[in-house]
Length: 136
Image (tube, rainbow, N blue to C red; front, side, top):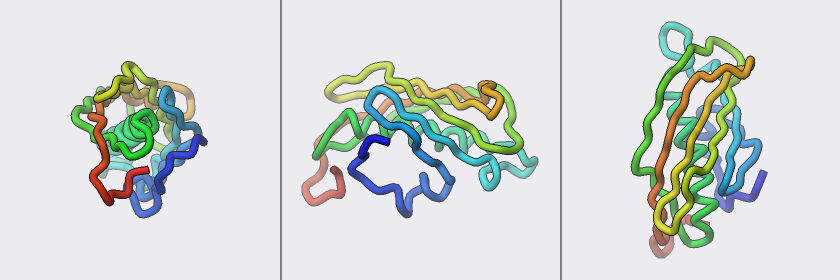
């Protein structure tokens, strides 16, 4: 994994069990367990898929933004295609546009059989970090 210059300890990424496998400004790949991230019917919660998508897009955008800058999500959407009941899902965020002030990613979430569970798009605003902030 590329050095993200920030820790995921104590964040929603850690709480959801998301494991980042690959990270660069152009592409971010991670897995997330279905167990613990379900809705009452035992299916992967749609919100969990969105958390995975936003996390991946935000990591990629932060890497693109560079030192002393931050990425702030301003838009996300998701289409849920099928249910996942067990195992892990894999999210792959691919950069659509990497500008000076905005970064957008297409995120595809698949199940262990490679079937698409969710498609999402996230756009992040890139800005200078506030003085004294934890930005890298």
